[in-house]
Image (cartoon, rainbow, N blue to C red; front, side):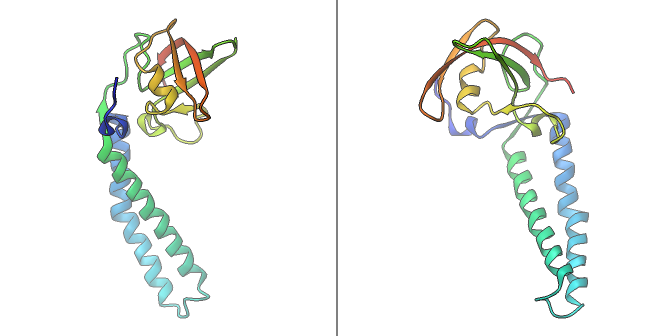
Length: 170
């Protein structure tokens, strides 16, 4: 099965996550951008910019905000909005997947998707694997009890068995 570049660049989002990211983008483009511009203008009026900590802090804040705007625009441009996956045991984006590696009894559990997909913040402690990653590509579409082999970044062939796949629930 071949995957087009367009499919590889798709970011899967729930409608709620898409709406939240769009609202953040709208805020950053509007009120937040205006607030930073005002801070920079106020700091400029204070005089010598070389030693003006407020000016440099505002410019750094502006750089971070503009970078986040570009990131959000990119994610939303590549987004495909869909429903949360069905609880049918099929591995797909939005599922919490449990696997074992061949020859190992230990399990590993992770979210297949992206933190943005489900609106997860940094406080949610779960490993996240992209569906476009070598492991994600190998297991996408499999069910519990099935195995998949993929090439790890170090060049080794690894085989995993799907133990379980359930939709992520906040």
